[in-house]
Length: 72
Image (cartoon, rainbow, N blue to C red; front, side, top):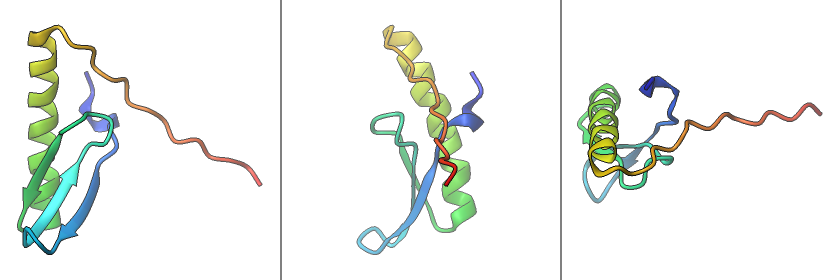
């Protein structure tokens, strides 16, 4: 499965004092990092692990959604 298709949201967490990166399509799939790049690299690892665990557990793996772009 191509993990690069999953949406990743990265934001600063003042309470955690680090960047958080999450893949909203994969519940609970979140990683942190001291920099944007570190958070992005870490979440890619976590996405792979999330998918591996889902396969082992026999759970359904969400298909990456596409953005709907409306023509105005």
